[in-house]
Amino acid sequence: MTLYIHGLGLHHGPIDPETPELPDLKNKLKALSGTSPRRTDRFIQLAIIGAHQAAAVSRPNPQTALYMTSGQGNIMVFDRVVRQRHFTGNLTKPADFINLAGNTAAYYVAAHLGLEGRNLFLAHHHFPVQMTMLLAQNDLQRQTEEAILIGAVDEVILPLELGRKFLGVEKGLPLAEGSNWMLVKSNADGALAGLEIKPECFSEKALKNFLSTLTPGTRLAFSRRFSAAESRSLQKSAPGCERYHYEAASAYHETLPLYVLNLFLSRENGVLVHLDKSPDSCRYLIMCVDNQQSS
Image (cartoon, rainbow, N blue to C red):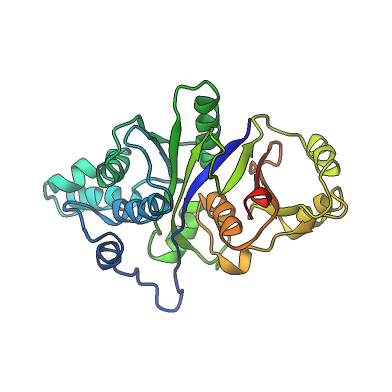
């Protein structure tokens, strides 16, 4: 099934390793939306910033559902609570205790945008973005929802070396915080682009067979889990297709795939196929966006 994208919200904040300080988000949020909700932390502020931008492109109906995901969730509030209880012996601050719940950020986003529909926070160990999009695709296909606002939010863990160890990535890899959102519907009228998420997990052989069927001129984006050699090998299976080099415009966070799709749609025109894989290289997932008809 093809979904139709009606709004995009991008926030991508690479952290400078020389001066690893997190920029103030309260002022950014207030400048963007005119408000700065009380009792919020950085994770919640990140979520609202990205969602507000998506809603500014196409104002969602109050009954729009909200499906949010994250690689690690609100990890910094968990760190604060642990320090309060086990290192200083203090009681947990009430706002921190409330914000420990995974869907608290989704609640604040819905309140900010005036949404009254279904509100979910989803987690997945390897493919948080793809699994959230598959759920949205399924619910739109079954017509249980008419519109869904999808969001993917990650904050940075400081110090950066601790963050890299926590994420299991190589030493020195640039890290970023991100809040990327997409308003999707089953209705094509006025859409910015089409979106399709392949529901099956591909083997390497099946993936190469799929790539061989792509139309020349299709762009390929490989997740950061692929080595340079793996990317080159797979690209050979797609003659006439060019690689989409998003890496120079981004740093790593776990829900980066949604940022890559949004970045392409905001800057490029054409068809993009995004490829991702499990750490054991046994499963491959595919997402496709097409804004050719919307140019």
